[in-house]
Every structure is written in structure tokens, then in C-alpha cells.
Length: 85
Image 1 (cartoon, rainbow, N blue to C red):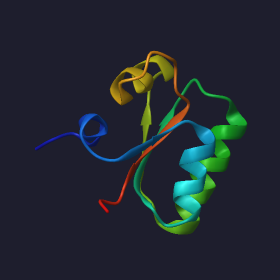
Image 2: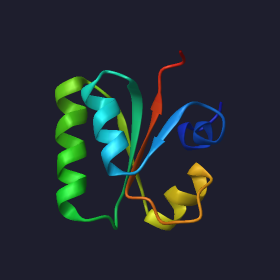
Image 3: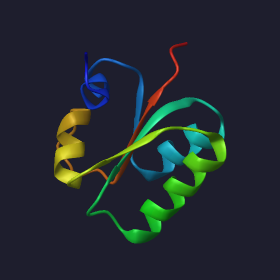
Image 4: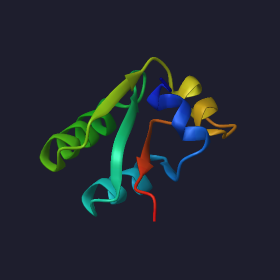
């Protein structure tokens, strides 16, 4: 079974707070990720949206780990897997 975090390498995704929040609000996100060391405001906002929109989410230990999983060279506070078009 493939871990959801590994799907960030192959599936359509968002990286970063603005695009992730937009995807959740628009119903495009099917799964979200939050870094434990991200700003509390970001974590709280994304968690609340996920709960409102019934989007499952997973906590990742560090922003660095999440950024690497997304294939970017910068620490990332949140990301999401999007629906296939």
C-alpha cells in the first residue's frame, strides 16, 4: 500500500498555504498535509477547512520533510493531493 505522502510525487497537488486553501475551498483537494512546525495560524486554518469540507489530512513532522515529499527545495507548511482531472 502506498503511503499518501508518497502520492505527492505522482498525483496532481498543491504546495503552499494559498493554493492548498483554495483547493480545499473549491472541493478540488482529496487529501491534505500539514507540517507540525508550521505557523499555528496556518495549521488551525487548514485543519478547520478540512473538517468543514470533509477532507482527510495528515500531520507531517517538519516543513522540510513535507517540501521534500512535494519535490520542492523549500520548506512547505501545507500541501494537498488534488482530484484527477
